[in-house]
Image 1 (tube, rainbow, N blue to C red):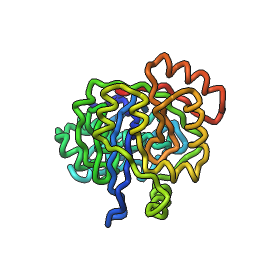
Image 2: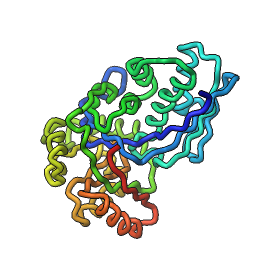
Image 3: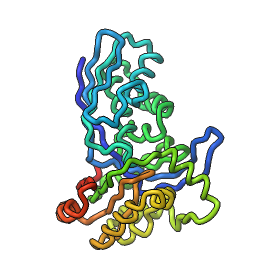
Image 4: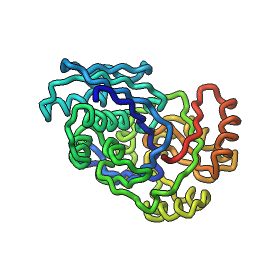
Length: 293
């Protein structure tokens, strides 16, 4: 097998509580990941030389050794003495720097795909341990799960079998801004001892609400520690939330460090209808209809 074409899915954080800064300068968090059907396409083509080449249609994506797919391929090459290279073509649809984990998902897909085309036969546990070296969100994407809880840096993954059959519909809006995750965490560190909202409920209550498919109940439990910080820096986030509330949506949250904001809706039909209305309201917004996958 010399060539592989794979989907690389985005994620939403339905819950994200930042617990504090670690000695390694990362943060301990508790999060509930949801994998959604908004996706990039990754095309892997093995090379006879050892060159790793990144090709991408998005200007914002680095094509050098800072690219997470490049780092994934290099890690496999170095750790397992691989004498082949790879062309990695990334066809981007997931907005860059939006809090949707596009780069992390791409890296996970590169690890999974190269494990196949280079014939490494690495176990999932081994791939997860490699993923942790590259980025905190990457282990979630190694698991083929619609939902999972993430703890530690977000890289310790626990499957949520109670949610395996749940499929949520979303309206997803990304304003025309790019957010720096390290900046948002630095700002959180500065203000965490005061002024920040604490969660009323936890992942267990949220899981129960999602299973009952009650948008109003779910909306009261959705939580993101970083939302206040990001919204203060980027008022567009609050504006989008207000627009969604004005449309009657009860369950609304920012994903990751932002600026993506999503609403949980009752059906695909409702999501499509809302999408048509919202696309005309602001030309700088990207509006997507998406669901759990």
